[in-house]
Image (cartoon, rainbow, N blue to C red):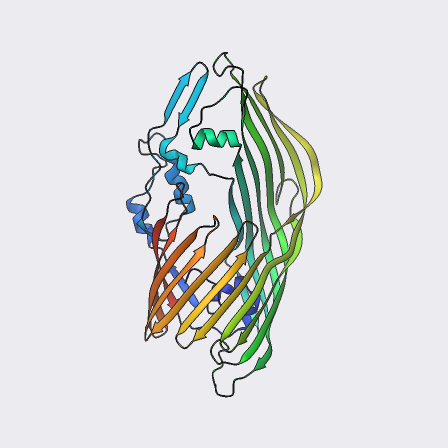
Length: 418
């Protein structure tokens, strides 16, 4: 269903804490089947740089696409001859297929990941413990450098070709005590169903979960590096000047700075009215971790051909932020059919998901679409078969998670518990 979030999906309680109080939907649990493992074992990239089949882009694609799904189509590896044209005052590099791996704009990736929460409910109250990881990185090339690599534009004299990197990574343990409850209920006179999604009544559920954040590690780097060509590209023994500077900040349990401490919260509410569902959930509201950090300045001296690492601050107080994520979802249920959509706003982009499902007896038909982190629309479709309290679901979907940014198709499957 295009990865749309609704209260039918138990995993969506991470997006909206109020979903915890809503009665379980038709399918409350899912066990993914790693279909891609066999495919990976039969045909995986070489990790030996001395192997003639070694291709670093294949390894990057594997990192972006762990072998949980079965590839139905593959854009192929980035591989071709690279042409370099050199003269005394001329240099042109034609990367051929490798050009596809050079982003047209800055390349951003990352997110906030709440991992395998362990908890226990006590009526409307619950306690939960879960690891939390936040990663963000942005790499950008100067316009001249991008054109030289992506468009095979000739390198010119007296020109700087630069690259910038701005990255943050932090990890913490989140301890939560929460409360989720039905705050309002007006039953539909003609329905005896207790499921607010389908009984035609009106109900409002709310939830809140403050959290204590125990910071385990924090790291940040802001760097800028480049080369500047001389008056003549190859007119001397040292035709370019190299510059590099990077400012780092770090703290870690068992190392410099030690443990961090902070607070945050998850909030949510959901309204049911005439089989409509409207939910708003926000995670990591005001989530901030306070650290005692060390700062270092790393620079490269071209004349001495050496790096210098200078500590500019130690035990410096610093507060890092865990970016909040807001999820707005809307669904309408009409007998065996569900139409749903959501908007997810996070640090890096705004995602949109839309999907539909209908049941024909024991068989489910599903379809959807979503906008990915690069503002491209992807498409999904699938089916499910239910046998009493267990079901098998399969789906196909497109993605462009590869260095060529070409569209690929994958197949996934899971066992659903009803």
